[in-house]
Structures are given as C-alpha cells and as structure tokens.
Image 1 (cartoon, rainbow, N blue to C red):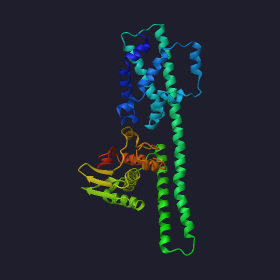
Image 2 (tube, helix red, strand yellow; image 1 turned 135 degrees about the horizontal axis):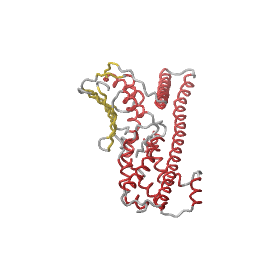
Image 3 (cartoon, helix red, strand yellow; image 1 turned 90 degrees about the vertical axis):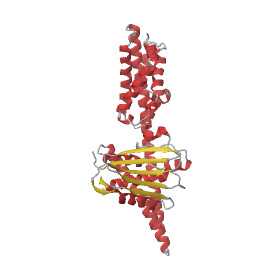
Image 4 (cartoon, helix red, strand yellow; image 1 turned 180 degrees about the horizontal axis):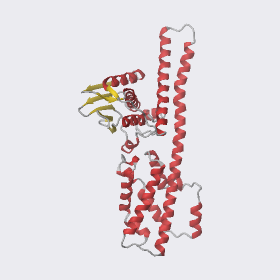
Length: 378
C-alpha cells in the first residue's frame, strides 16, 4: 500500500489519536471534541494531495527554501488551525507538540500496518510527508504569530481608548468646577463624575497589573483568612450599583457563607463578574447574585439574561483578550472598548483559592457563572 493511500484509509484513527493527545494539553482539557479535532482532517488531506502530485527535485528544493509569506500561509487549513489555537489559549509549545504528535501517530500507524511498503518509493513518500508536515507547521505558526500581533495591537488600541474616555470626563468636570457661580448640585454632579472616572481607571490599571503578574509567572497572590462572603457579596453589589444606577439587581444568600478566603480578592472577582453581566446582558432584565453555603463549599452564581454565548466560545471565554461573539449589537458595541481581562482575572483568583469556575449559557436560562469554593482549600 502506498503511504498516501494508507493515510486516507486510516484517517479516522489518526484524527482520533490527534484529538486524544490535544485533550491532554492544558489548553485542551475544557474544549469540545469538535474544537480539538479542528482542521486535522483537512491538514492531512492537503498533505496527501501534495504527495500524489509529481514534483521534481528542483521544485521540492525551491519549496523548502521559500520563506516568503503567501496567500496559502494565511488561508490554508493549517493556517486556520494556528489562528483557532491562538484564540483557544494554546501557546507555541503546545502548537508544536500537536504537530509532533500528529507526525508520530502517522508513523506509528504505518509501522504497525501489515501492508506497509518498505521500498524506495515508500521512503521517498515518507520524506515528502515530513516536508508536508513542516510546511503545514510553518503555515500554522505564521498565522498564529500574526494573530498574536493583531491581538497585541488591538490591546493597545483599546487600552488607549479606555484610558482616554475617563480622562476626558475628569478634564471636563475639572473645567466645569473651575467656573464661578456653580450651584451645589452642579458641583456634586461634577465631583461624582470625577469619582466614577477615577474608579474606572483604577479598575483598568488593576486589571493590567494583574494580567502582567500572571504572564510573568507570579500568579495572583491571595491571603487566606477567616471570611464571611455575605458582606463581600454586599460590597460587590454596592460597587456595581454605584456605577449602574439604572440597572436592577437581585440578591439571595442562604446557608453558612463563612470559609477561609481572601475577602478583597473575592470582592474583586465578584465585581468583575457583575460588571460583565451588566455589560453583556439585557439592561431591561435584572442581574442576580446568589450565594449558597453547604457542608463542603460555598457556591456563588452571577446570572444575566440576554443573547446566549455561542457554544464554541464557552471554552475560550476565560482567556485574556478574548471577546466572545454576541448577537446583540448593543453588547458588541460595548465590548469593543473592553480589554477582555475581567473574566481571566476572575478565573485566576478562583484557581488561587483552589476553587472552580464554570459558565453555562442558553436563551431560556440566561448566562450563569458559577464559582465553587471549598471550605478547606486543597
């Protein structure tokens, strides 16, 4: 059996092997089977199609030396795979590992095959297969790097916008306060705008510092102490109400909410979740915060109604700089001026408490973020 025919005949087993390996990678543990397989079938079929073409030694040598980006390097199945893996939170080491595992799987299946051909033509096909794998990896890395660059540029653009808006508010309010003869009500309104703008900038800078800390490997530090999460929830709601006076909030607390936790960090996490619920939810429907204490853990839930998060976006929603698509034009417009760090920081705080965070989203039940904190952290 020719090597190219062997790959086509065993395509399902090879792809399943790819999926099993990708499942073991840190970024792949929460992904769906479909997302894990991604473009693996198309990548292999593209390599097979190239194997079945006749190329001279000169043509192969020229292809091996070609490092100038082409349309194929940004639109091929391998390139699309690189873009999706970047969005899903894979790093370059994991991306390389996937291609290395795919190559090893194909060779292992071929070695165990009874009809494997071991003549000179098979050796040449294997050499060309390796060339095809290298080409696919190059396309994937090129697109991955392009997406990283685009994400960084968008990050800087949104950062500039988010800092400029509250600064303009502060500047306009300060100019207003400098005018003589203002009424007390006008002065109070201007002072309130300055306070809100200052809080917005403080949250933004705090998110940036936390993100930088985690990227440097330090993680988000927590100081565990005896804590009652009831007042923590109340403080989070008070903060978010101050900035969203027209939004309705619903709260329900039940059971024993005391455990060892970092109260300030948990308030930060809840404030981020509530802010996210207001930003992406239906403003005409209430945002709810519930807390339930049982024998082993405290469970916190933040729920908002509105357009659901698409299923294929649920596994990447906690990644930094990710904006989950939303059918609501209003939500899309608001998300254009958000760094996408809030949910990432929530996840890091929960993990630092040895807890778990999950999200479910549907049109009927709305979007529900659930934090489960064990009473005795592992």
